[in-house]
Image (tube, rainbow, N blue to C red; front, top):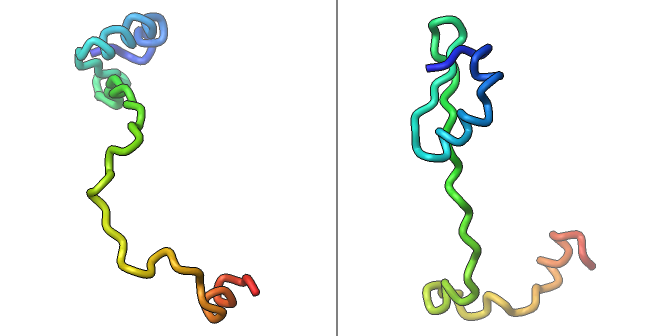
Length: 75
């Protein structure tokens, strides 16, 4: 555990520790107030991943009727 004052001076080191999986707790006095955690890397989306997994009802992509266009403010 690190106090806020100590965490300020050691921020780069604490970030490295948290990125490495260590549990980093920052306290205000003796009271723990913050846990510094690493963010999981975001994976890039792959085209075609959902191919064959989603189904649309027949007519789902048909043009909208006049009543529906009006409801959307398109006339």
